[in-house]
Amino acid sequence: MSRISSNLLANTLNIVQLARETALQNGKKDQAERLNSVAGPLKSLMSAANETKPAAAPAGIMAQKDFRTLLAAASANSTPGASAGATAGMERNKIVAAMAEGGMSDLDIARQMGMTREEIKLILNVHQKANKV
Image (cartoon, rainbow, N blue to C red; front, side, top):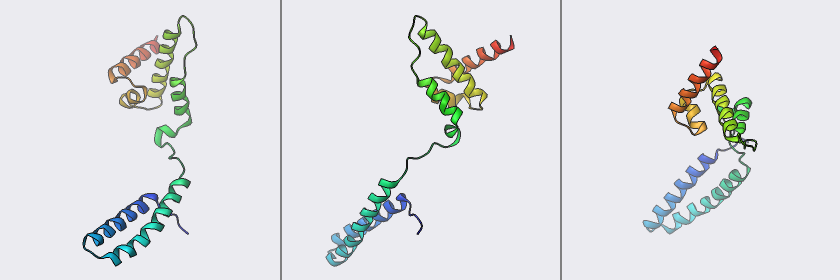
């Protein structure tokens, strides 16, 4: 037996409920009752489909293990100490550089890191100049 997508079930239920409401508005109670007997099982199927539905897996670059590791490192708390702010900034810059080296655009990096494109471009320019020396 093939699996029915939850979107298809939801759309079908909406159509049946709309047809039922239309029948009631037109005074066709028998037709509305027949549609109601279809809507009940559809609701049950939708509930079952939503309960067993696995969480959506990340796609594209977000699915890559090394990228997820970088994001985890970016969101992890830095080590406590006097230079924690500077250390966190340097780690963030390393993560930005690694993302760029991995093929991400400056716009995508900015979105992921919560920074502006100008900040990303500045970090990448400094990183490139530091690697040339």
